[in-house]
Image (cartoon, helix red, strand yellow):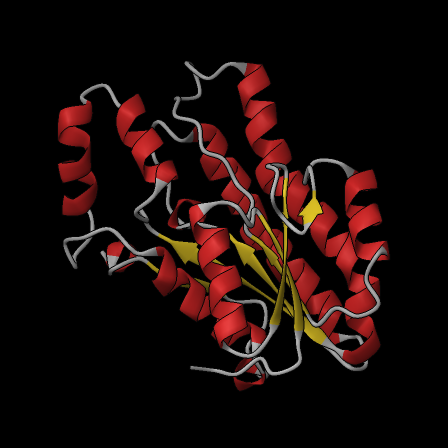
Length: 235
């Protein structure tokens, strides 16, 4: 595994399945993981849609080497079905929250160089008929990542920024999508069948890729959308 010895990494959405796996992986790699979440029990209470919250959390830190924007929500609905309020909520958490995290962390990261990893999705690369808000939010995250990467490359030392694009991952989000499907009893089989490797991903697999992108092993990787999708986007 890539090493993060001595690096301080802030993880939003730290109480979620992927966020908690990333925090554990950072610790195993020798880094110091600081969890932030709207749910109780994290190192920092954080509503990712609040600029004031982001400012409070980052201003409490003396050093920051990496940021992982892992907070996210999903909502099923076509462009005709989706309620505008729910559209705005998905965009606020997934896209606005990522923008605010990058903006708040950048002054700290610029001091000694660092890395940002944004959790995008294969749904930021390909569309789904009933994922209008999620597609829009994750597509935005992927292109925001490229903009932040180009800005960070002009810093001295540089700040890298990459996006991870998972397919369906075992955990509460996939469970919610299955429960919200028209035929939940068939939804899991359909999700699995869409993946050439014939299974859902695991949070630990996403976390391992995240650690690599945060580490110096990825020093020449920036502005990338990195699929981790069992071959889904290869079709």
